[in-house]
Image (tube, rainbow, N blue to C red; front, side, top):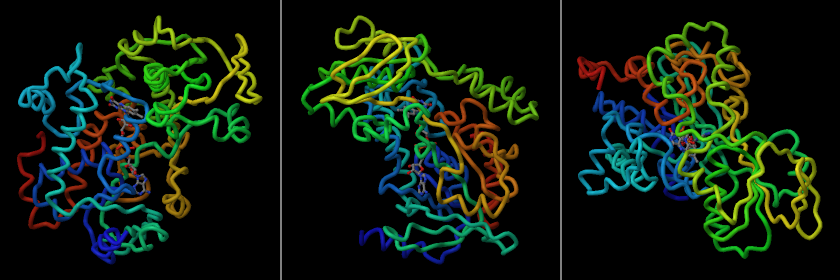
Amino acid sequence: MSDTIEIMKSLAHRNIPITIIGGGIHGISIAVRLMRDMPQAARHIVILDKHPQPLTEWRNKTERQGMTFLRSPAVHHITSDSLGIVDYAQQHDRTDALAPPYNQPSTEIFWDYCMEAVKEIQAYPIYHQFNVSKLRWDKGTGRFPFRIISDKKYYGGEGFRSSCVILAIGSEDCAYVPEAYRDWQRRYPNRILHSSQFSVNTYQRLEKTGKIVIVGGGLTAGTLARSLSECGHSVVLVARKQLKTEQFDFPPIWLGPKALTEFAGESDFQRRYQIIQENRGEGSITPDVMESLENNENIRILPQTLIRNINMDKHLIVETTRDVITNVSQIILATGYRFDLRDYGFLQALIKQHPIPLVCGLPILDTNLEFLPVKNLFGSGTVAQLQIGPASGNIAGANLAYQRFRDRVLANVPKNYSNVLVGQKNR
Ligand SMILES: Cc1cc2nc3c(=O)[nH]c(=O)nc-3n(C[C@H](O)[C@H](O)[C@H](O)COP(=O)(O)OP(=O)(O)OC[C@H]3O[C@@H](n4cnc5c(N)ncnc54)[C@H](O)[C@@H]3O)c2cc1C
């Protein structure tokens, strides 16, 4: 805690040109790109995150479900050189950590490569553990209109000012629990958990006293089922629809100019929201994970099944549209996330003070990913979906977002450095 207070002192009352809120995949990726494009910018950027170390959220979410390989290909990672991981694997004699058919990296090599990128950032005092409790925009108050205030309890309630803010806050705060489960969850709070609250690591060590029911038909549900079955648990996978096998979670066409130009031509943002839902679908499972679920004696799959009721005797009794599952020790809701800007407490005052237009919780940003009407506030990740489309929240979305706001963000670096930019736009 004393380190935290020292760090806070170093930010308190300062004027910082560029602030990135979120030190996850998107926040770090954007910082690395900004620093590579304009090395001098490093002295004018801070990254704020509630965790003491960068990328903690990524590490937690992949470890929690026992994910061994990424879903996306090797060219999607956190630096600007697309072959970065492939080169890294070759240099370190680790090409077996890239899986066919698209060189999907293992979570281990992806992590090691990320740590190399983090070293570039940590050469400067850029990353700060700082839980943002309030973001204010005082329009018309000069060059540093944003005020960023920390959580009082843990970080002293200090604040500083900034010219430009990038929100790279992910969607972890928006875990989606379907309506039908909310009441059951209130009744059995320790027995019914969203996947974001559950870790296979804890379960590896526990006695196998009852079945584990996993609700969902996406990759999180599939990976959890595989990991738990591997450590000897008996798992029932309950999915509303038939399970679907797909390598990617959205059609790759969404990374190219054709689909994105058409998307940009759609002026109805409600329709854009629908297009995103249609293209991300209801969830699918990669071929390798699906193979490990099939003919697995520890896993029972119940497709096209709904849960009708949940009761408790000594263990949970789960009544489905197919049959009754008894002796259930735990239910895990692998039901995903539904981003809603209003779920982020630190943004509530800003949303109240300035009428940020929202469609189903997503902000309508301009084509540079700048918030309306808040000048110099940008978004990357799921928050930018209405402009970037279905790939926005994925790793590749950080590069798409960066290309949109790069020049606007770097314009906040004090002038005597900006000549370094010339000729580096497409790095
Ligand atoms: C299990 C899993 C596997 C995935 N695998 C892939 C994959 O293979 N390929 C792919 O392309 N995508 C994948 N994704 C999707 C996506 O790439 C990840 O979710 C990725 O972590 C998103 O990055 P992000 O930076 O937007 O969010 P995060 O990594 O969640 O980072 C957001 C950060 O913001 C911080 N933050 C939020 N609010 C505040 C605040 N008030 N103050 C300070 N800090 C704050 C959080 O602490 C967090 O560190 C996966 C997602 C999951 C859940």
